[in-house]
Image (cartoon, rainbow, N blue to C red):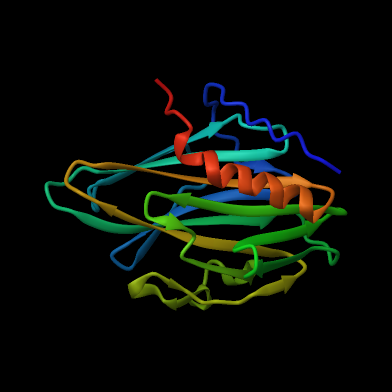
Amino acid sequence: MKTNAYLRIDNEENFEYSRKPLIFSPGIWVNGKVYWLGSVTEKLLPQEDLSIKIKQANVHSRVEFFNLYVTNHSKAGKEAKLILMQRHADSVNEQFSFVSPNEDVIFHFADKRIYLVNGLNSNGRMKQCTVQPLWNVSTERLWNCRESGRLNYQPMAKGSAASLFSLDLQMGPRETQKSSCWMIEGNEKNTVVHLNEMLLKNTLAIPDKK
């Protein structure tokens, strides 16, 4: 089955953090600490001289697409990591999630549907990824090394789980860096993989909201 590959770039809309069966939960790691945004679209971290803003872009009916803007407000360069999590909204045994090394993406299977998760910024695609039981997310078991921001790699999980991946941020003084992430919904693997390839080719060309 061929998928409509047309990517519609409209004005970005308000952030919608929940779209069953997956919920998008972004966070940012800096200096060994993790700050989760919850359902807010903007967050100021004065102790880190950073701020983050999230906008949702309408690119395709089967795609949930987010642009994330992290600003370094200090006079010195900073390094950080975006931690981007998709978690199952409901706890049922039929859910299955795994990291696919062939496609370099994460897949979720739920309610007889397939969901592909991916993202990138100017520093490249997702550097680290993991799939964890939901109860691990708020514990040290999520981390291989929290101090260096390394996730504890686990390739798959059944049932109520969360997938997480990181995007590196290297920001100069007063610089804002844009990152993008998305979730693609479909009935079959080839459909979502094809849409993912289209997004990888076009994401950095998506214009910012004026």
